[in-house]
Image (cartoon, helix red, strand yellow):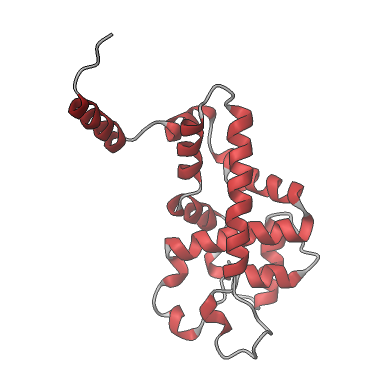
Length: 186
């Protein structure tokens, strides 16, 4: 992202993702870390935590709906594993990095020096907050389109199938539990 004013950077970002916010304060809030509100007059600048809370629920719903529609033969456990892996912190942080959200994040002066801008938790939260901002600004259809474009379209059906498989640790635990029970007889 080039060195421009914050407003110019946000305008450039909005153009890049083909989304112009009707309420620019939603975008500003989504991109404000809690440390970025320090020193501001109370109530003038909000941080992104409330939006991240809402975005987490919206994201879970959109991802769940996608998995449910795309994989009608999957049971609930398989769908849950896939959803968990798609919305886990590392996955969302990766998407936020691809969207270049980190450089747009408004941080307090002290946090600038700690590297929190590039931390996976911070980036995952800013992505969730951004999803909520799109939802509130343009509605559920726009949020669904954004999540598909930024997250879900990154994966083929085979890659989602891989995410839905049990990991080695789970398989080992199940085998150990079964061996403790002993053999089953008909």
